[in-house]
Length: 90
View 1: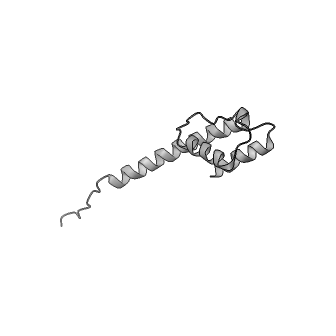
View 2: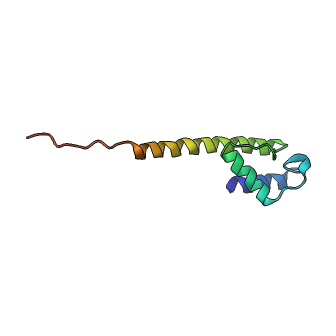
View 3: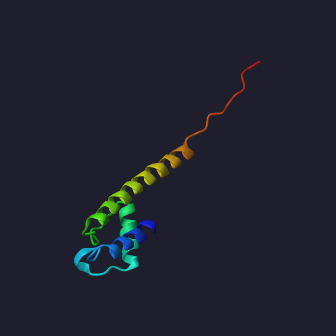
């Protein structure tokens, strides 16, 4: 959601619409674009036209990949069998 609001802020600050010829975007458009960018799905129906938006989209896609790698590592760690610690024989 933070990236969605950041995209909306970029649209307000830059001249012209954020998504090009599609006209002014709504907050749900920005949230949808943010979700598809974060998950690196990228349907292509909404594409930022200018450079702060494109750079921000790249940053969000990289963040999504880091999140995915971390989440997968946590799942694998949880499924890994634990070693039992046996006390040394006396």
